[in-house]
Image (tube, rainbow, N blue to C red):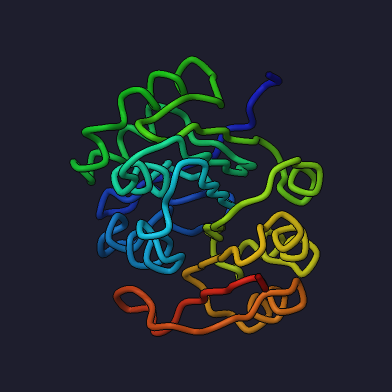
Length: 221
């Protein structure tokens, strides 16, 4: 594996990690784990849809919190979990961030140990995890897999528009199984239009906490 280009991280007064590249926090200031469960799990109809061989894909690995929430929810495996990340956080900073979530932190040791060794493929409970490093606009089109559920969790579209563009949403659509789903915390109009252009039926739902709306999407069967 080549040299990682690590994320530049600062910490706000609440102890939440903030990306210096995008000036945006990595998770909700209210409750990041609850936000993940509301947005990405419930938004994709999980855990009810989980079955052996189910495939989750994600744009924006961040602290690994979505992965940990998925591992906590998965009743049995194997479940394939693939995440695309341009600026990975260092293991020590991830460990510091996860201290805010004792439930996730309790199962994080195998992940943190593997990540600290520079590994991007590892097992965590029922999950077989692969983190693909690099710009998703370049890596996703060549990914050989497809997903049953997508977590679209890049930084704010206003601050990181390149991870929400129509071409990338088209690549998401091309790598989604029939009747597959996607969910995102953002309800930005251009993101919804990009998903519709990629072949999804798009719906707005109530967001988490102070967010009025979020987005859920489904590919045709």
